[in-house]
Length: 265
Length: 120
Image (tube, each protein chain N blue to C red):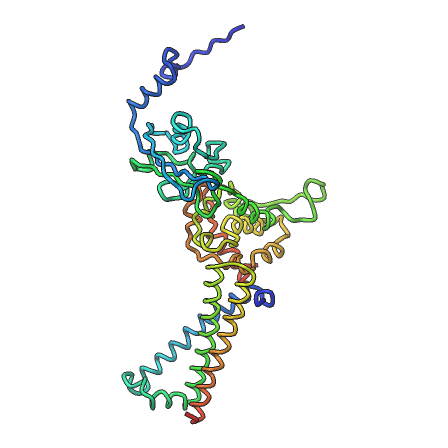
């Protein structure tokens, strides 16, 4: 049995138009921007270059949409990492017009510029073009033991961990971290100190220390209390400014310092 | 390594504390300069030597020397460790700053003691 679905008026697919024809129509009827994409292959190039493309956009077009438009129609070789397209996976972090942002979460219409320049994130090694390596961030993230440390377990049924809304409030914003790396990219200390633990890992250290189910406070404080640990933070606050999920790593770092300086228990 | 002898948080507590206490001593120092004798002549040789002869004021100067040296050289260590990394370099910077701090405090203390005892 064939099921016929009738789409509401205005949502019909114009089946009589070819894909290229549709594209040209959209392109001629909508506004355009110049998209400048950084190209760099560390195996071949000594410095990055910029390729420029004219891309049509609508009110809802994101920077990632524009990059994928270029990738599908003009230059298939552009290296870009993406996945969910809804600011959840944290894959498409890049520098957009000089600021670290998620490409899928940044609308071109909101940039208020005829030229959109996209570059790979700072403080990360470039794999190719806009794709960067996350090894350093994942290593520091693992170092701070990003899990509940407690001998008793809800899973084995020895104890039920109850939390009041006030208990959850202490750490919940830090649990929103999607590990996109934008905070590390914006951090001035990360740019200078190649061994600095970074705002992402420090914010996650606070997330678990502030969780009243966790018993690993002393272990984590020992990990971050070293030469290139928490004290490298100069409280520039740029990590908090660029976080697409509203996490405030700079505040988490200051609260962690409270534990180490003895005015928080 | 200094940071293996002392935890970084202990070093930073000293760093913050020396800054705060030094501010207090510097305020005392400036107030004394404004209230005792002529401010314009305060850097003349006789005036400087006279300062050291006053034991309470010599103690203020000695405290300022120690506090600012500890704070300053630790600050320098922090800056240098952020500029470049590596075990050998970091140890050299840490011990270098520690040695320079001790040398400056020793030399400054020697000057204060000699001047206050009338040996200059």
